[in-house]
Image (tube, helix red, strand yellow):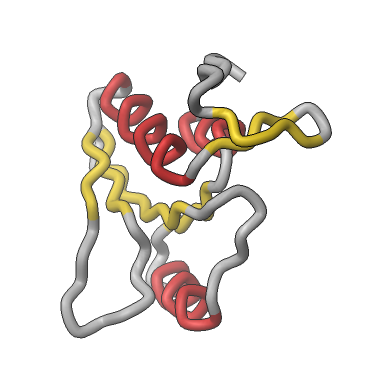
Amino acid sequence: MADTPSKKDILFKVKGMYMVEEKQVELKLKQEIEKLGGLCLKFVSPGMSGMPDRLILLPDKKIYFAELKAPGEKLRPLQLKRKEQLESLGFKVYKIDSYEKVEEVIR
């Protein structure tokens, strides 16, 4: 893990993983994507519920979606459906609920 969350961000530590608030994970994702020269945009799709929270745009025309969750939280059924729809169109959709998952995405 590149960065250890600050004490104010940590909710608890389980099996060696730092558990932080969803908003902190979202901020970390945004910062890391920007370091790569990309954009991590808040994604809102009026009229289509269940879409991922973030649209990730990286150099070389790379486009990904990210659903941010609290540690250990699962996707709701409609979010799973949207994930499957986007993946069937060839897009990668990540469920991110920890700093470690952010690190996996940026590799």
